[in-house]
Image 1 (cartoon, rainbow, N blue to C red):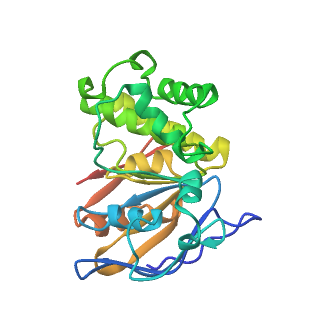
Image 2: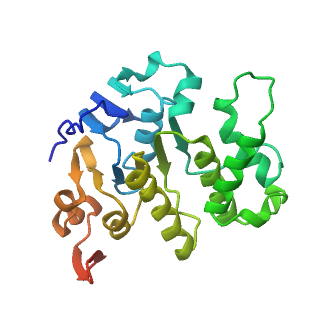
Image 3: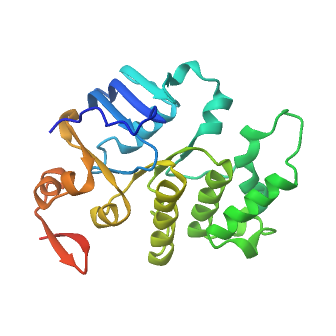
Length: 267
């Protein structure tokens, strides 16, 4: 199964790849990938451990070099944009969050406003703080604004990292396993939040996940990373199946329908 260029929606795709090849340690993750990630689309990136989900997201964010090909942001080659412009349009949520300074929760959320501050010596203003407070409320951290980050649980830190990328207000979200430290309630809330960003605000979302059932529930599209650099991409109704996931995860999978939900379980 090979990915084909994504269909347009009457405008330039916020994020696209042109003959993109990505590899790490001599292992090919994808080759000659030409794909458009359009406004209003929420993409699940699925694959086994070591398949290259993180590496691919880092390449798309411009923090890691591709082996070949190009990444386009708003129709222009990513490398031709300034880092500030990239940060205004695209946010990367890494899998592991590192807190260099023991700031407060609100101060950490406000980091997302840095690309939008007009001068490097200026502080965030009341509008920036209002954006950060709204983002913290969206991830159920409204009552913890004065807490030190070092006192937070792992799940609370993950939600704070999500709040920071929301505060950044990009058009494109690249999310690397954002639910890995969250309880079930907050997993579902986070995925509904980003699915809503795509659906209601015409954002473009790429999220790496391990749970295909969550991908089918919250995402409109899926990108499957098979061994050997082969990929499959398209609408979830076309790409996600018991057969494709059995091949992807190298374990028999079964699809179960339950009240309109598509559930994929190991056999």
